[in-house]
Amino acid sequence: MPVAFVCRTRSAMSPQELFDLSRNIDAHVGSMTKSREKAIAGTTTGLISEGEYVTWQAWHLGVRFRMTSRIVRMEAPTSFSDEQVKGPFKYLRHTHEFRPDGSGTLMVDTIEFAAPFGPLGRLVEKLVLARYMQNLIEERNEFLVSQAPPIPEPNT
Image (cartoon, rainbow, N blue to C red; front, side, top):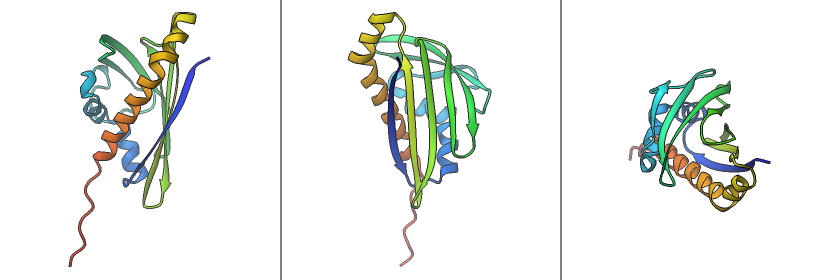
């Protein structure tokens, strides 16, 4: 049974702006400087679209990983989903939703994943990976919403 969690993040950006920023490879790289993440194959810069893939290389938990993800579903500007097609997880799916919320957007990230290695993998999921992955998504989202242009001061 995969691990699942949901992160909710509010932003002053419009759904379209946040949708585009969330699928921007360069913004993702900017949000993952701690893990030295970089795009090394597939769509490696700019916006990624349905059917396209990206291969990431990064350091997580002291280990270098490579993971290839493909955008498997996209409904602009309300949602898109990506899935691991090759990498360290037995299964990984990330659904991104963008809901109008007052004068901004509520971004909802639903993550589902399973580690390999049977019972040992399930133990690592519970002890380490679930919290690590949630922190990673929360940090990514904080970075993304910080990219919103400043709201101009009213003329006095």
